[in-house]
Length: 411
Image (tube, rainbow, N blue to C red):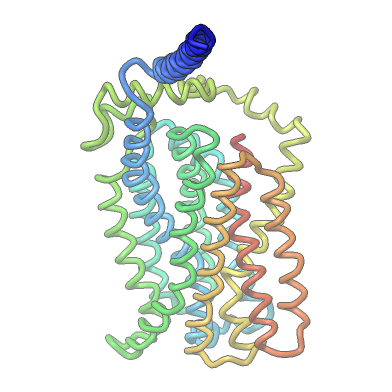
């Protein structure tokens, strides 16, 4: 019996030692793998350091560009708020298609000057370009408060299109140079979210500025342009000090930002994701040859549809609420805001899903479906409340799709 007990104990001991050896080996393997992963990540910085640096870039780049884009959107779209505040009556824009001509004149010069303006941004740097153009179209916006004829307003819209032409693509380009592909959707959404919310609440601001009617002998709609123009000039000046340059030259041209070690680390991380961190020399032939790619035209047609919806909502929603749905001027100005708030929620939700699961096309299709449902409701429902619900769906699908499309083309 004693012999059997001793044998059993020996077998149990051997088994325990084997299990212990297996556990130790597994622990060492895990530790080795973690160390290997960390070593493969970077020799100087950890993943937590990378997250902290990205948050610093977010605060400096996304917030600054977002607020400056807010001003750009308000300045190009405030003609809709001014229209129901007396602009169309005083300048006789209700005759024929004058209002539509004034609205569309902006895009004539905006489209023509987009490409050269974006190239100019790369040449002189985003601080000078974005801050300078913001200040310039702020001055033009102040001028919107003084025309006495609709043709003078038309000329100002053409000039505004020239100055704002490169602003949005330059912001998108600048943001794309600082993040890896699957970090971009959330950043584009936050950037665009700031501008979209401002578009919504711009109506409330316009209603407040309308109350200045009669001050200095000027109509309320004129004060909308003048005050927002002054604010734009201030934002342009502040933006000059807060904006950062492209990663490859940010050390010398960005005020109190990342250190040289941190910038080199950022460039290393971006180089692992793609090979365009160092810009190629400008080549017109290569740039023009992209027009032979059918995918470029397909993307352009999809983006055309999205932007058409966004433009229509931006310029005509206050008028639709006032004249088609029968709301008062005050209600029409204020009811612009809630659909944009809902659009902001959709933007954040779809961007989180897109980056987490690394999907792009399904997000675009989902947002487009919201528009396909919302537009018929908005246009043909029998009651104002139901049509206003359609405005929510259309605005959400349209504005959530703009950052989705921007990141789709990057990937």
